[in-house]
Every structure is written in C-alpha cells, then in structure tokens.
Length: 117
Image 1 (cartoon, rainbow, N blue to C red):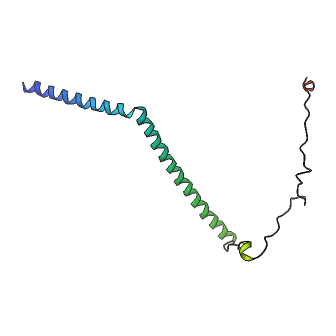
Image 2 (cartoon, one colour):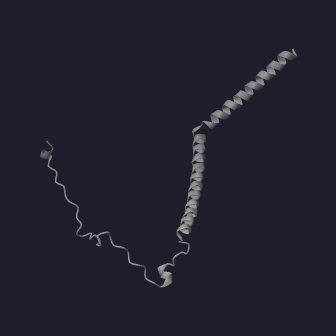
C-alpha cells in the first residue's frame, strides 16, 4: 500500500514539474518574449561596441602620444588665432598650380552603337 502511494506521489510530482517546465519554455518562445530577448541582445551588443570604440580611441591617443614623443613633437603648437599670427599658406600642388574648376572639363564620350559590331 505504501509502495503504491509513494510511486503515485512521485509520478504526480514529476508530472507537475514537467508541465511547469514546458509551460515556462512555451512562454519564452512567444513572439513578445522573443522580441524582448532580441532587444536585450541588441542593447548588450551596442554597449560592447561602444566599449570597444572607447578602447580603440584610448589606444589611438596613447599611440599618438608615443609617436609624438619619439619624433620630438611633445610641445603642442599654439593655434594661429591664439598666437596673433596668420596661418602659413597652404602648399600648392606638385605642378605649382591649382586646378581651376571652371576650365577643368571632363571629356565627353560619344557612343555609337554601330561601332560595336
């Protein structure tokens, strides 16, 4: 008698446990739950990308400082407006002339379909 009662109770408990587990899994697979999970993953990925970008930026600043130190460029140049001087003129092109946008015209290509054959 006790043996039957024990196994009946154990079976009922296993059934309740399995039913609860299946219902929990079904709730996780609803469209609303899947959308919330995807949104959480997207936000987490965004935070990771932001942290990565900040790490890269910090590394760039550090490497730039190392290069400036190695090249002897430690002292920052004063801004021309702060120093009261005009900025240096820009270098001209390799040919010593600047292109004139009004005279620079792209060549036109005529297309004759009869020339293809």
